[in-house]
Image (cartoon, rainbow, N blue to C red; front, side):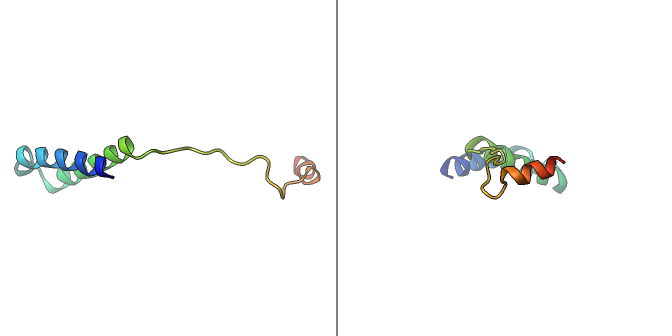
Length: 68
């Protein structure tokens, strides 16, 4: 979380110093939104998991019935 905080602080400080007076509220919001998404994507690990194929309640007989 510290890396996310530092990254966002640096990004927002630069943006506020240079571009905020020249942009609309919508443009600033889009910058804010994309900066947070980029920072989270870069600093917070994400893992995709696949579905479980060997679930205990799905027996061989039930699998056979679903294929019919």
